[in-house]
Length: 391
Ligand SMILES: *[C@@H]1O[C@H](CO)[C@@H](O)[C@H](O)[C@H]1NC(C)=O
Image (cartoon, rainbow, N blue to C red; front, side, top):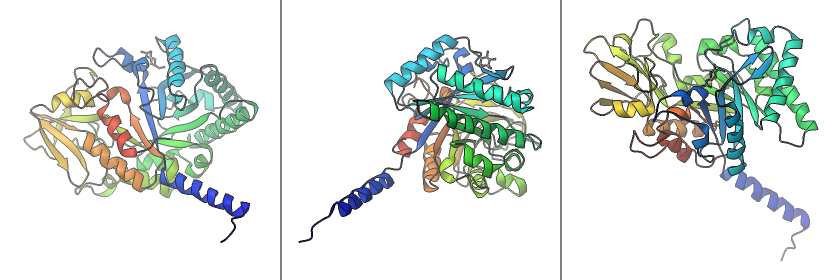
């Protein structure tokens, strides 16, 4: 009989730990929520207090902004927000809550005065750390929509300064290191222009890939197209071949972002069109955006809970090539994601060993369960179920 020495024992134990780690690879489920969803009328009114603290691994508050080189939150219920952060984290100590700065309205112009000089960047970075620590956030997300060619060095430097400062803060602090992420474009031209990917890869914990808004009522010529197709469509030629999730994910990885740092965006909304003729397929002529939703009230755009209402009496078609559905009722056309398409998307991201899934945004899922008869948060729950184990 062989005697197992201590060395062998620890070798086998080490191997076992490794195997266990491999077995249960855990994914991130990163959920954005928007501060303006609290302004929607019932039952669309969404507040963070009512969020299940175990729904997502990461919650991201969007959006904060910058004023005089300092981070600020302009929120009607700001005081309540900080209490809620603490109570959610008390219920689930593993939950990470990040603050996102930027967004579409803030645009590039919101970042410009601050990134112009190294002293204002420093002032901003210091204000961020104080702000995040004071309010018990776990990290920062920069949603600069989008840096131009001229801005891309500013963007890289900003991220680098933040990463350095977060590291120094961690060395001094008794708390975990603050996380640093960015919400980034999925458009090929934007990816080429906006990001120095190899540099960013060193400094960011992960990217939140905005892999949606591939088609919408801004299209010229104006024809129907899907918001977030997983794959290239049969009719896609030339640059249209880039407008899908698979291409965008592959391109980020090809340009140097490690797969495990890519968190793939899945939308809980659809983009709609008003049809111009009796044609209803993808690529059919449209006369403009689809009608506004009763709650989100923005033309060309419907939340999943509004889509569920729209689907009553609509004709649903599943695109075999792009692996997502669209629905038609009268002259209205909407391309959207449902439980089936998000399950396919999660399988896709798992096959590529990506870091996980990002949801834009949890306030547009059927969070009450009143609209879709699929229980609360049908899309987020489907993503979560398909991911298996969460980080
Ligand atoms: C949400 O944030 C934006 C930008 O900071 C701000 O202008 C707006 O008033 C906020 N909305 C609410 C409901 O707090």
